[in-house]
Length: 451
Image (spheres, rainbow, N blue to C red):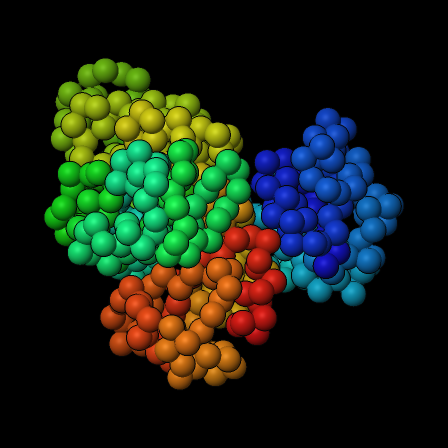
C-alpha cells in the first residue's frame, strides 16, 4: 500500500512507523525541513518539504500513486483542503483521512459529516473523550486499558513481582485460581507471543489480559479487590474541547456529578450555559485555597484536561497524593510524559497520540474490529474481532487450532454479553467477539484469518 502522510509531527511519524513495518511505502509531506529530516531518520520513508495545500508539492510527493492519504497536521484547514484537493485531482486515491478538531466543522457533539470528499474523519479530542468515557464506566485501574462492554482489561507487569525470572507461562497460570492470560512478553525492545513453555527472563514485561478484578489485584500487586463502581463525585480541570466532548457523552444524570474548574471567565460562563447540570468554578487551580475550599482531595475522580501536559500531570499527581481516589491526566503533546505521570501516582495517563493512532489503524484494518489497543509503540496489537461466517475455524475447539505462536486468543464475549477466558475446550462460534493479541509484524496473518 502506498501511503502519503501530510504532517510529520508526532502523530504522523507514529502512524508512518506503524504502516512501514507492515510493508507499506510511506511518503511524508511537511512544511518543516527539520521535521522532514527527523521523519526520514525514524521511518523508512521519503519526505518532501512543502505544503499539503500546494498541488505541485502533492504531485511531487506522489499523491497520484497513493492508495491512502492521511492528513494529520496541526491545522484543520490544511487537513481539509489537502484531502479536498486530492479527492478532486487524484480520484484513484481510495482513502482520504483527515484529523479535524474544530467543532465548527464537525458540529458541537462531534457528528462526523463527509467534508470535501474525505472518506474518514478522526477527531483526536472526540476519540480521547470516548476513551475517557469507557475508562470511567468500566474501570479506573492504574496503567490499564479496557475493552468497552466487556469485563476484560489489559495491563502490564514488570518481571520481579508476580512474574518472576525462571517462571514459565504454564506455571504462572497455576499460581492463582482466577482466569487470566499472558498475552505477550516485551523483551529488550521486541514482542514475544509466548507458549506455555516460554520462560520469564530478567527485565521482561508481561502483558496480562483478564476478566477478573481479583486476578488484576493479585497479579498487579494492587490492594484493590472490590468490584469496580463508577465515581459519584468527578472534578474536571479545564474547559477544553476534550472536556466538551466528554460532557456531551455523559448523561444528564452523570453531569450532575461533575464540578468543572476553569480560570478563564468567558469559557467558564460558556460551559455553564451549555451544561446547566454541572457546577462550574471560575478559579485557578494554582490558587491553593481552592483545594481546601472545594475539598478536591476528597473527590472520587480528578480529571486534568487542560492544554498543558505538565500542568495536567502535576495537578493530577498532587490530587492523588492528598487523597483523591482516582486521577486521570491528559497527555497531548509528548507521549513520553505518560510513564512520568504514572510514576507520580496518576492512575490513567491518556495519550491523545496513542488514541488517535489506534483509531486510525482500526479504520484501516476494516470491518469486524470493534475495538483495538496498541502497546509498546505499536509493536503489539490487541483487538476485539467479531467472528464472521467466513472465519475458517467456526465449530472447532481452540485446542484443535494451531496459530503457530502468532496469535493469542485471550478472551471471548458471547452474543448474550457474557465474557470468558477461553480454555482448550472453547468452540468458535459466529457472532462471538474475540479478544486477541498479535505482534504488529504479523498483522497480515490476522487479515487472512478474518477476511
